[in-house]
Length: 204
Length: 261
Image 1 (spheres, rainbow over the protein chains, first blue to last red):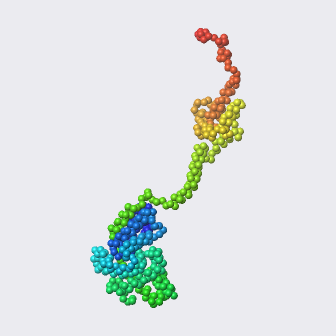
Image 2: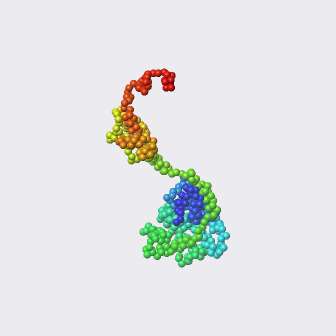
Image 3: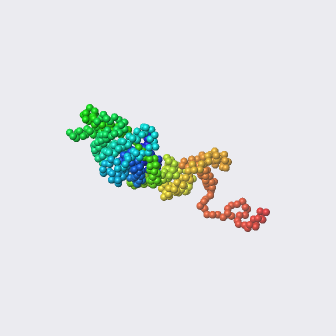
C-alpha cells in the first residue's frame, strides 16, 4: 500500500526526509501543474508558479507548519496555495478581472512546449489537440474555467472546489455545467473539431 | 418550478462525474437527455487530454530548497499542549517518585535486618525470656549477671535498633557455624568427659552453639573445684600460707639458698 501524503509530510517534518518531500511533489505534480498551466497558459510561467507554490509550502511548513494540519488533505492545502499564487500572478498582470482570449500573448502556450518528442503522427495529433482544447478552455469565463481546471486537472471534488473558491456546491455545479456546454459549443464551432476524436456533428 | 428544474440540471452534472448519484434516465425529459449528451461529449474530450508535468529542474530546485529548510531533528517543535500536560502531571509524578523511593528504602532496611518471613530480631530476643527457657545457673549472682546482659539486649532497652541488630548478629548461629559434637571429639583438643558433660545437660534453646556449651560447662566445673575458696575474704600473704617447710616464716633469700644446697 502506498504511503499516505500525511505520512510523507511527517517523515519530512520529523526526520528531514527530503526523499519523502520529493515523493510528495512528484505524486501530485500533474494536478498542480495542470491547473497552473490552464490558468496562465504559459509553460515557463507555470513552472515559475509551480516552484513558487512549493516554496510557499516549504516556508509554511518550516514556520510551525503554517496553516497545514495533518487532519486535512495535503493536496487541498497545496492547491489552495497554488491558486493564491496563480491569482497573485494574474492580478499583477491585471488579467484576472476580465476574461482574456489569450490572443494578446501571441501564440498559445501549447506552441511553446518542447517539440523534441513530437516524432510520430500520434504525438503531433496530441499536441494539436492540446492546442485546440487549450484555446477553447481559454475562452471560457474565468469562474467557469477555474472550476473546470480544478475538477479535471486537480481532480478535486465539487465540495472541495466550493470550499476553495468560497461558493456553494450548487454554484460550483452550475459553473461546471455552463463550462461544459460552452466548451462543447466552441468545439463544434471550431474548424478543427476533428481533433476532438469524437463525432461532434450529430449532437447539435 | 424553476428551482426544481435548476436542481435537476445540476443533478445531471453530478451524475456525469459520479454515476452513482443524480437522476435516473427515466426521469429525464428529451431536452435534459440532449443536454446530458452534450456535456458528456465535452467531458469525454477533456478526459482524453494529456496530462502535463513541470520541468525536472523545477522539481530539483524545490527539493533542494526543502532540504535546506528542513526542520532539524534536535530543533523539533514540542506542541504546547504536551508541555501543559506535563505540567499538570508534575504533582502526580513527584508523588509516585516519592513512593518508589520510600518503598525501596523500606525494602532495603528489612532485607539488611532480617530475612523476609523470618522472626524479627526482637522476637528472637524476647522468646527465651517469655518461654522460661532460661539456662540453669549455679547461683543467683550469675543469674543477675546474665539478667543484666538480657537487659542490655532487651527490646525495652533504649538502645537503638542498630545495637539490637548487632547483638542478634553476634549470637546468630548462622553467622559463624559452631563445631558439632563429633567435630569437637575428633579434634582432640578437649577432654572427652568435658564434651560429654557439655552436651548432656540442658542448655538454653535460644542459643545452641557448642562453644558456648563448653564454656558454660567449664565455668561450672571450675566453680565446683573451687568451692573452698572464698572470693570475699581479704588477701593473705603468700608467706603465711601453709607449706611443707619445717620453719615457717619469713626468711632471707640467702639463707634459703644455703639450706637448699
